[in-house]
Length: 222
Image (cartoon, rainbow, N blue to C red; front, side, top):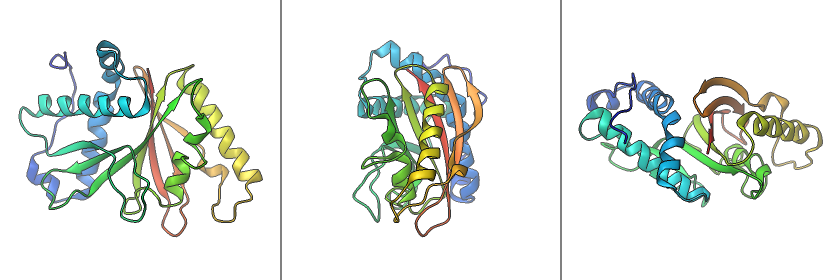
Protein backbone atom coordinates (compact mmCIF):
# COMPACT_ATOMS: atom_id res chain seq x y z
CA UNK A 1 0.00 0.00 0.00
CA UNK A 2 2.83 2.38 0.81
CA UNK A 3 5.20 1.16 -1.88
CA UNK A 4 3.54 3.26 -4.56
CA UNK A 5 4.00 6.55 -2.75
CA UNK A 6 5.81 9.09 -4.91
CA UNK A 7 7.84 11.55 -2.82
CA UNK A 8 10.84 13.79 -3.55
CA UNK A 9 12.14 13.19 -0.04
CA UNK A 10 15.69 11.88 0.16
CA UNK A 11 16.83 10.40 3.48
CA UNK A 12 20.35 11.54 4.38
CA UNK A 13 23.17 9.10 4.98
CA UNK A 14 23.59 8.01 8.59
CA UNK A 15 26.89 9.80 8.96
CA UNK A 16 25.27 13.12 8.06
CA UNK A 17 22.91 12.80 11.03
CA UNK A 18 25.74 12.91 13.53
CA UNK A 19 27.37 16.10 12.25
CA UNK A 20 24.93 18.99 11.91
CA UNK A 21 21.92 19.05 14.28
CA UNK A 22 20.09 21.71 12.28
CA UNK A 23 20.56 19.68 9.11
CA UNK A 24 19.23 16.48 10.63
CA UNK A 25 16.19 18.22 12.09
CA UNK A 26 15.41 19.95 8.79
CA UNK A 27 15.45 16.51 7.14
CA UNK A 28 12.87 15.24 9.62
CA UNK A 29 10.54 18.16 8.88
CA UNK A 30 11.06 17.60 5.15
CA UNK A 31 10.17 13.94 5.57
CA UNK A 32 6.97 14.80 7.47
CA UNK A 33 5.92 17.40 4.88
CA UNK A 34 6.44 14.94 2.04
CA UNK A 35 4.56 12.06 3.65
CA UNK A 36 1.92 13.28 6.05
CA UNK A 37 -0.73 13.90 3.39
CA UNK A 38 -0.84 10.16 2.74
CA UNK A 39 -1.75 9.35 6.33
CA UNK A 40 -5.51 10.08 6.24
CA UNK A 41 -6.17 7.58 3.44
CA UNK A 42 -3.91 5.01 5.13
CA UNK A 43 -5.71 5.53 8.44
CA UNK A 44 -9.12 5.13 6.81
CA UNK A 45 -8.01 2.02 4.92
CA UNK A 46 -7.07 0.15 8.10
CA UNK A 47 -10.03 1.49 10.10
CA UNK A 48 -7.78 2.44 13.01
CA UNK A 49 -8.80 3.55 16.48
CA UNK A 50 -10.48 6.95 16.71
CA UNK A 51 -8.88 7.64 20.11
CA UNK A 52 -5.90 9.97 20.44
CA UNK A 53 -3.40 7.31 21.51
CA UNK A 54 -4.54 4.91 18.82
CA UNK A 55 -4.23 7.52 16.08
CA UNK A 56 -0.73 8.47 17.27
CA UNK A 57 0.34 4.81 17.29
CA UNK A 58 -1.01 4.38 13.75
CA UNK A 59 0.83 7.52 12.59
CA UNK A 60 4.09 6.22 14.06
CA UNK A 61 3.57 2.90 12.29
CA UNK A 62 2.85 4.73 9.01
CA UNK A 63 5.98 6.89 9.32
CA UNK A 64 8.08 3.82 10.12
CA UNK A 65 7.03 2.15 6.87
CA UNK A 66 7.52 5.34 4.84
CA UNK A 67 11.05 5.69 6.20
CA UNK A 68 11.90 2.03 5.61
CA UNK A 69 10.59 2.01 2.04
CA UNK A 70 12.22 5.28 1.02
CA UNK A 71 15.57 4.34 2.52
CA UNK A 72 15.55 0.69 1.42
CA UNK A 73 16.99 -0.37 4.77
CA UNK A 74 17.25 0.97 8.31
CA UNK A 75 16.26 4.63 8.76
CA UNK A 76 18.69 6.94 10.61
CA UNK A 77 15.98 8.11 13.02
CA UNK A 78 12.66 6.80 14.23
CA UNK A 79 9.33 7.98 15.60
CA UNK A 80 8.41 6.69 19.06
CA UNK A 81 5.52 6.96 21.50
CA UNK A 82 5.48 9.00 24.74
CA UNK A 83 9.10 10.15 25.22
CA UNK A 84 9.87 10.81 28.87
CA UNK A 85 10.69 14.30 30.07
CA UNK A 86 13.80 15.21 32.06
CA UNK A 87 12.03 17.78 34.26
CA UNK A 88 8.41 16.62 34.21
CA UNK A 89 6.19 13.57 34.62
CA UNK A 90 3.98 14.74 31.73
CA UNK A 91 4.88 12.94 28.51
CA UNK A 92 4.47 14.22 24.99
CA UNK A 93 2.68 11.92 22.52
CA UNK A 94 5.28 11.38 19.78
CA UNK A 95 9.05 11.82 19.72
CA UNK A 96 11.70 11.64 17.00
CA UNK A 97 14.88 9.87 18.11
CA UNK A 98 18.28 9.48 16.47
CA UNK A 99 19.02 5.75 16.18
CA UNK A 100 22.79 5.99 16.67
CA UNK A 101 22.56 8.14 19.80
CA UNK A 102 23.96 6.63 23.02
CA UNK A 103 20.70 7.37 24.83
CA UNK A 104 17.13 8.11 23.69
CA UNK A 105 17.19 11.91 23.49
CA UNK A 106 14.54 13.43 21.25
CA UNK A 107 15.29 15.64 18.26
CA UNK A 108 11.65 16.75 18.03
CA UNK A 109 8.56 16.15 20.16
CA UNK A 110 4.87 16.36 19.29
CA UNK A 111 1.81 16.87 21.44
CA UNK A 112 -1.34 15.45 19.83
CA UNK A 113 -4.98 16.44 20.35
CA UNK A 114 -8.27 15.25 18.91
CA UNK A 115 -10.53 17.99 17.59
CA UNK A 116 -14.10 16.73 17.63
CA UNK A 117 -17.58 17.13 19.11
CA UNK A 118 -16.67 14.65 21.85
CA UNK A 119 -13.36 16.26 22.90
CA UNK A 120 -12.44 19.00 25.34
CA UNK A 121 -11.05 20.96 22.43
CA UNK A 122 -9.83 23.93 24.44
CA UNK A 123 -7.18 21.60 25.88
CA UNK A 124 -5.38 22.05 22.58
CA UNK A 125 -4.44 25.41 24.12
CA UNK A 126 -4.74 25.43 27.90
CA UNK A 127 -5.86 23.60 31.02
CA UNK A 128 -4.58 20.63 33.00
CA UNK A 129 -3.80 18.75 29.78
CA UNK A 130 -3.37 21.87 27.66
CA UNK A 131 -1.03 21.22 24.72
CA UNK A 132 0.36 24.71 24.21
CA UNK A 133 0.35 25.39 27.94
CA UNK A 134 2.53 22.36 28.66
CA UNK A 135 5.14 23.63 26.20
CA UNK A 136 4.94 27.10 27.73
CA UNK A 137 5.35 25.74 31.27
CA UNK A 138 8.36 23.66 30.14
CA UNK A 139 6.61 20.43 31.08
CA UNK A 140 7.34 19.35 27.50
CA UNK A 141 10.57 19.53 25.49
CA UNK A 142 12.55 21.77 27.83
CA UNK A 143 15.75 20.81 25.96
CA UNK A 144 14.33 21.77 22.55
CA UNK A 145 13.48 25.03 20.80
CA UNK A 146 11.47 23.67 17.84
CA UNK A 147 8.70 21.09 18.26
CA UNK A 148 5.25 20.36 16.90
CA UNK A 149 1.60 19.65 17.54
CA UNK A 150 -0.71 17.23 15.76
CA UNK A 151 -4.39 18.08 15.45
CA UNK A 152 -6.55 15.05 14.58
CA UNK A 153 -9.54 16.72 12.92
CA UNK A 154 -12.57 14.45 13.43
CA UNK A 155 -15.24 17.08 13.05
CA UNK A 156 -15.62 20.13 10.78
CA UNK A 157 -12.35 21.23 9.12
CA UNK A 158 -8.93 22.61 9.97
CA UNK A 159 -9.73 26.29 9.41
CA UNK A 160 -12.68 26.04 11.79
CA UNK A 161 -10.43 24.77 14.59
CA UNK A 162 -7.61 27.20 13.88
CA UNK A 163 -10.06 30.09 14.21
CA UNK A 164 -11.25 28.71 17.56
CA UNK A 165 -7.70 28.17 18.80
CA UNK A 166 -6.66 31.70 17.86
CA UNK A 167 -9.77 33.08 19.57
CA UNK A 168 -8.91 31.18 22.77
CA UNK A 169 -5.37 32.57 22.66
CA UNK A 170 -6.75 36.09 22.21
CA UNK A 171 -9.09 35.59 25.17
CA UNK A 172 -6.29 34.32 27.39
CA UNK A 173 -4.11 37.29 26.49
CA UNK A 174 -6.95 39.60 27.62
CA UNK A 175 -8.37 37.87 30.72
CA UNK A 176 -5.64 35.58 32.08
CA UNK A 177 -5.22 36.04 35.85
CA UNK A 178 -2.67 33.26 36.43
CA UNK A 179 0.58 34.97 37.39
CA UNK A 180 2.59 31.81 36.66
CA UNK A 181 2.00 31.97 32.90
CA UNK A 182 1.75 34.73 30.31
CA UNK A 183 -0.28 34.69 27.10
CA UNK A 184 0.12 37.04 24.14
CA UNK A 185 -1.79 37.72 20.93
CA UNK A 186 1.56 37.24 19.17
CA UNK A 187 1.18 33.50 19.89
CA UNK A 188 -1.65 32.93 17.42
CA UNK A 189 -1.27 30.35 14.66
CA UNK A 190 -0.20 31.42 11.16
CA UNK A 191 -0.71 29.37 8.00
CA UNK A 192 2.53 27.90 6.65
CA UNK A 193 1.51 25.40 3.95
CA UNK A 194 -1.37 23.36 2.60
CA UNK A 195 -1.16 19.66 1.65
CA UNK A 196 -3.93 17.28 0.56
CA UNK A 197 -6.01 16.60 3.70
CA UNK A 198 -3.47 18.40 5.91
CA UNK A 199 -3.02 22.06 6.81
CA UNK A 200 0.27 23.25 8.27
CA UNK A 201 0.54 26.23 10.62
CA UNK A 202 3.23 27.72 12.84
CA UNK A 203 3.45 29.71 16.05
CA UNK A 204 5.94 30.89 18.66
CA UNK A 205 5.33 30.76 22.42
CA UNK A 206 6.94 32.30 25.47
CA UNK A 207 8.21 29.91 28.15
CA UNK A 208 8.73 30.38 31.87
CA UNK A 209 12.51 30.68 31.98
CA UNK A 210 13.71 29.54 28.55
CA UNK A 211 13.74 31.15 25.14
CA UNK A 212 10.52 30.93 23.16
CA UNK A 213 9.60 27.61 21.59
CA UNK A 214 8.59 27.46 17.91
CA UNK A 215 5.86 24.97 17.00
CA UNK A 216 5.00 23.51 13.62
CA UNK A 217 1.35 22.42 13.60
CA UNK A 218 -0.27 19.80 11.40
CA UNK A 219 -4.07 19.62 11.25
CA UNK A 220 -4.88 16.22 9.77
CA UNK A 221 -8.37 15.67 8.33
CA UNK A 222 -9.52 12.26 9.53
